[in-house]
Image (cartoon, rainbow, N blue to C red; front, side, top):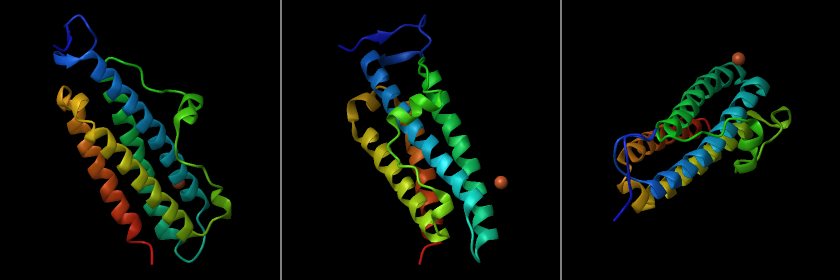
Amino acid sequence: MSKTIHTSSMRPVGNLNEEHILGNVASLNGILADEYALFTKTLNYHWNVTGPRFHSIHKFLEGHYRSLLEVMDGVAERVRILGETPLSTMKSMNEVNQLNEKNGGQMSASEMIDDLYHGHLKLQTEIRNVLEADAPMSTDPGTEDFLISLLQKHEEMSWMLKSHLD
Ligand SMILES: [Fe+2]
């Protein structure tokens, strides 16, 4: 029988399993660190892109970094909704970030788009892996629904990035 969290907790009311919630918080914090890295990369490439497609890609990446900022905010607030503390410093993010940083000043526009595309694919894999861990999600449908929506956002952003590649 799973342990039920009571209303005195900061967590949402319901038949939530403590162990599953803490597992989901760890997953959300891992995703948050990678969203932060992808946001920073996108901002980096927005600043440093050059070439004949400068204006369109510069503007396009501005739309993406603004979307990723909203995404990060949502992931961090989902952790707060679950009654825990999101990773909130650059140091703690860097300790779990799985995306390698690159020097945008030395990359072509196509290399930038390709790198971002693969970053979004990595996030999709990470989110799918969390969703496929059935037990934690079965007791936390709010987080499951949130992650499905997040997956859809990354799928759309991946499609937009891929459409820029030859
Ligand atoms: Fe700007």
